[in-house]
Image (cartoon, rainbow, N blue to C red; front, side):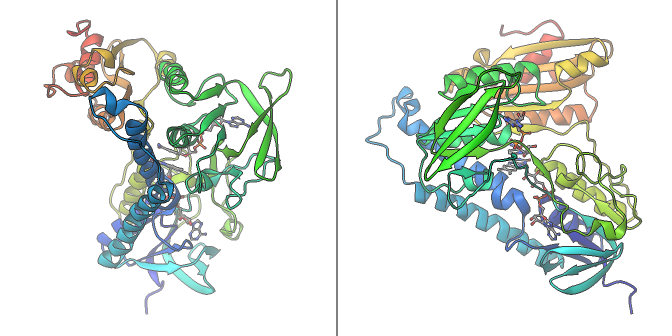
Length: 466
Ligand code: FAD
Ligand code: NAI
């Protein structure tokens, strides 16, 4: 009889966990994946990336038809109205198809789905739904949940104070949505409901939106969202929210101190970050401690300090992104199988899927400057022929290169398709490209991607179109 039930047991079936499980099975390891949710795919497929993108896409179409973009191409519409139930139904359909797709992939690759939440008994065994299961290797991929704001109680069913999960499932368009937190979730979901007709106010503690992004991008983001009609209260903190029936009253004050004020809203979205899911995992039973941010630390191979226990995705340090979790999933499975799985954490793109999209990879200009001498060039989308003909004047592409070696250190883009464009920059950086390499690579015309080539030509000192 085998010493263990499985070679690999993955806890959590989000983009990190399900990918790790499939890759482990592909490599010939007997694999199980414990997931307590009713469907596979984790936060991303159930209440994150996928439903938010379904609503972002749908609301963008509505906005185009309702608020004049169609008219700018000479397309006349009759009265445009919203069927929110139908929009929510198409969202759920995308979620259902994709989560069902993972179940199909588990069956195809012979990954056993253990239905229930897993808790460690020791480093090689967990309890899932009352059953003890043993494995030679256990991968923790439990993801993350919304960080609560002290004193503010989220109630997604009531729909007055909600988190991202509640904001994805609102049954009516709020009159006034106040978003606490001007980060990725606040701006994506704020954009959805603004396009569908809500007045949206974003209250952000810091002086700028989108922490972590390049300074120019953050400044431009504030201008663009204001132009779109969002009210921004930057450098402002929420000190309390009182709910009276269907009405919420927020008390806010300047982050640096000053007089308090109130804001009335019929919906409040709390989006101040996410924190690792570690409660109930029984980490104390295996002696695995968390770092100061509540994350599980690993080495470059994704091994924890406890032999046979590995960790990936949102529950370990690094950006909380689905593609980062997926790449770590592949790498950890390869490392368990005795191969060499590597993730280059210096080249992980990030994208905000608003309109336009905001994307970046590598260092910000501020961070690059701290490391040494740099060359920087920015090319405006206004001068890009495709953006111009598509009536998309906002944004730019910025290339940051090392002044001596010309190696590309970072690329930032604001454009309708910045999320797609940034893949080219990530590939270039992965290959150690110089800005000259990008500048001398032929780019199809007319495409938004030519703006990246022109920004790289700018680093060389010679763009053509500005
Ligand atoms: P998760 O996806 O959180 O999955 C972890 C799974 O583990 C969950 O299903 C949970 O039920 C399960 N679990 C937890 N504890 C246990 C246990 N003890 N036993 C069994 N199962 C357990 N990222 C992007 O890259 N692009 C986007 O567009 C994007 N949009 C987002 C939009 C929203 C609204 C949100 C909230 C997040 C978004 N993200 C996006 C972030 C992305 O969802 C996460 O980075 C990603 O899901 C992390 O993957 P993971 O596998 O680490 O964890
Ligand atoms: P975030 O970290 O992006 O933004 C949170 C914002 O809230 C920050 O700007 C912060 O300064 C602000 N804040 C914190 N406390 C505050 C307070 N008391 N009052 C006012 N503002 C306050 O976190 P967010 O938006 O919740 O997203 C969580 C994670 O989910 C992110 O790390 C992101 O990586 C991931 N995500 C990714 C998406 C994508 O890739 N497109 C989409 C949505 C989420």
